[in-house]
Every structure is written in structure tokens, then in C-alpha cells.
Image (cartoon, rainbow, N blue to C red):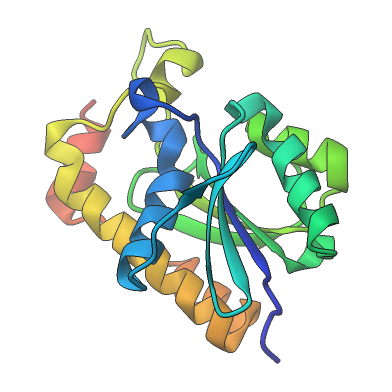
Length: 199
């Protein structure tokens, strides 16, 4: 049975200052989905939005901590049930190169997810994009707002492309096939794993 996802919301912070940062992984995946389908985002009061078929792509223009405000507004406006929403966001507890679908559960310290849960409950779908833990001596806040390193560029490209693939599979075949195929993948090459463990 196909999961009836109607809203796909990528989390991030708006503006040039935050473009390409780890916290904006959700924006990057939506940009790739839009590129594949030849779509443009239109600016609305609370978000940038696009649409293909019956699915809306949403990039909130609030800052990360208030993401739930936009999710709630779009869910209400479009009469979308919580389980018909997919949130794409960064995740500190997985390395860059891993992604994972999840339904429900806790926020794991991700403030945009926490705000969304506080406003609409925990039963939405999630696609978590690993960004890794901060290096020794780095505060989490500094790490998530940092840009991906030059030597991560190729891996990041694979991650964003694969994440877009996974969303397309979710839309066509449902959650279980998407989880079964993508949750166990590690997109890192051995040299990239070694490099990370040495950091």
C-alpha cells in the first residue's frame, strides 16, 4: 500500500548566511527533488513552496526552532493528517553518508522536529540525513551552522541524490519498501570512513 504523503517539508534556516550548512540538509534534498521535476519554488509569507501532482514541497522561512509553526499552518490549510506529512531534517547521531526513514519517536535534540511535535504530535514520517557529531571542542550550535567541508563534497552529492531517490520510492511504493532499502545503506567509501574516524 502506497503511503499517501501530501506534504514534504525540508527543515533549514532561510537566507544566504545559512545556505549550504549542515542544518539545511532538508532544504538541499527538496532542491534536488524540485530540480529533477523541473520545478521552481514560489515565495509565500511563511515558506517557499512548490508542487507536483498532489504533493507540496515546503521550505519554511521561519528559523529552525519555529519550523512547527509552518508545518501546522500547511497541515491545517491543506487538511493534511499528521501521518501524511514527511519531514526531512539533519541528524547528529548518524554520520554523513547514512540516512534513515522513521515514523514517530522523539526529537533527538533536533529543535525543528521538537517544535513540530509540540504543535502537531509525533506521528509524521521523517527522513533523517546524517551530518555526524561535532569535532572535539566544537559546540553543537556551531557545528550544525557550519558548511560542509570541501572534502565532503562528493559524499554530500551522493547523499542528497540518494535521499531524493528514497523519497521517490516512498511516494511510489510506500514506507516499508523505502525503509527496507535505504535505512541500512552506508554511502561512504572506505577512505571516507577512515577519514572521519581520524577526525
